[in-house]
Image (cartoon, rainbow, N blue to C red; front, side, top):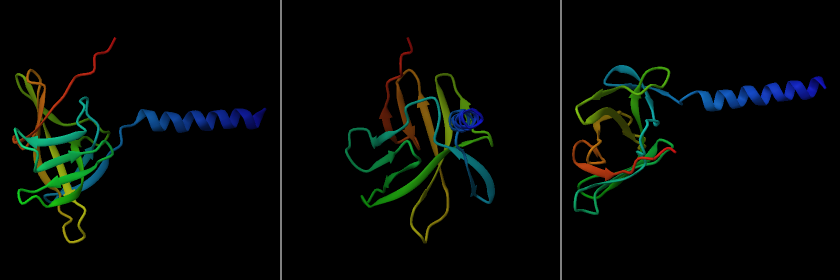
Length: 145
């Protein structure tokens, strides 16, 4: 009986830890310690393109990995995240019909370990998300019933 209760408490604590915290990562960018997360309240995963073009792309995966394709069409694997507080609350600036986040990414090359800043903005009426104001992805909000 004690073993069963102990096992139940252990499973409960593990599940509480998994579901209660937003995962954050501590990085050093521009000589300053920052925290990043891949979780915000919008469907950010996907491919971002210049309007009317198929390449170059930026692909953001939900797990914090992705692909950044440069103008010369070379592709680099990246690690990315949005700047957040130490407990995982995203830091953003709210506009009249938009929100702007700090997107940090770095390529996974051994010789290039510097984190790079890019503005990430969400335009609510247009239902579009932009990286650096150029690469765009349309989104659909989840309707909660």
